[in-house]
Image 1 (cartoon, one colour):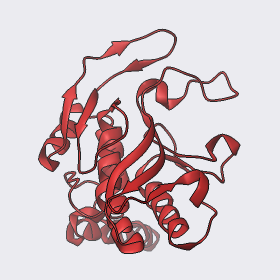
Image 2 (cartoon, rainbow, N blue to C red):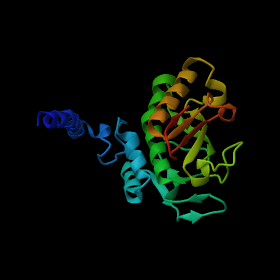
Image 3 (cartoon, rainbow, N blue to C red):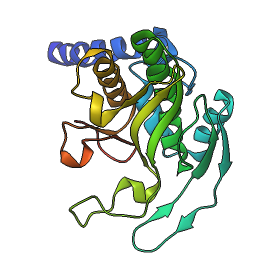
Length: 227
């Protein structure tokens, strides 16, 4: 009997502590709380964004409540393994992008969260100027990962490549030039990469390989990678 009580205490106390934490913690730290893209990211944010990949209604409602403007796309099966499912064309967030973006709802939700809570505040804090435009190499593209026969997350609309930023004061910050250049520009890009790692499933930058020397690859595919 004493052994049974010991096991109950050993298992029950940690479980009770975890449940109490989820009950009392701010919603941003609770992975089971409703997703709100306008609240600052917390320990539960990535799990909420991941949950949005599996729940179309939840995801699109989150975008609507955040004020993101988009055009829904019908599901599309394409050649090979490419396709767009639960996808949209991103019409307007908080910052203009240099290209038309087609992506999944979950990718758009993560991108908006990163833009609102990481990129825009970092630009003002570190560089002293708001972002006027995000320079991107695009999102959806039916292709394999460079040098492999495996489908890229771009082929499913689950990824975006960020090359740089145009600031309101006219400066141009780009990953290729400023990632290792020192100064405020480097600090800014490192902050953005670090913040992306907390929100996206996969974040790849110049230190990953030569193919990413000039951009950040951010995707909401499977796994969890920060390089």
